[in-house]
Length: 318
Image 1 (cartoon, one colour):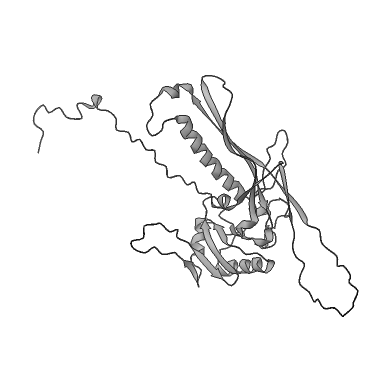
Image 2: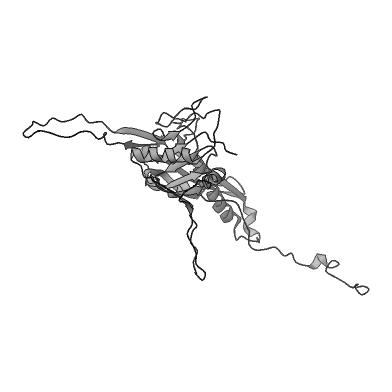
């Protein structure tokens, strides 16, 4: 087949054909923040947010004769801890010319970018909560930094000690990573679960990287149970990967932002995020023919009682 002579086709008339640009902007970037979302949000009123932990004494024999005089036993004071609030801040600058332009996929460039920045900042927060980063008090030239979850876990932490591995001090200092690594296996996981249970914890969620998730899916026994959706159901049911042990049942929650060498076994209600300044976007003073908006959040992580959770460290990450 061939065109008739002198056919004026779309190639010839390209200059007069309007562009076909979709009005929808697609994004495949991940924006889930499972740990940050799971943490209860509480109020911070100072840049050093303090909290107290306590524990019951060990059980012992308790029998007395009739009429015996009662003597008070020694009591132990609570432990006072604190974490620094960290300022998360991003800004968007858009020239004022933009207000007169017709856009595809967005009514306002500023509104679109502010929403995008807020999502990115939330990912930064999740990364900080998982980070093995010590608390920094800060000063006029140094930013305050919060201590991430690995810095608080001392009671039920499994790590290598044959090289340089060491537990954190439990007061906001970073743990020392070992120069060697080992593979996550079921025995290692079950031993940590037992340690948490013995300490009085009831863990419910395991946060781990995709690589470690694949290791966990290889555990044998009554694990990897998934919810079922029957044919004809007009609803979506979340698929769960759970692991049943004598020490409790936990849900595996993969995260793209967790350190690959760490696996967190958490009792979620024992972790809070104390917010000094909730996420807010404000317009800054004009400095020219442009508009600047700032997105800022200030918060810190609260380890209500680290003995209710555990961590498996120094794992092969790939």
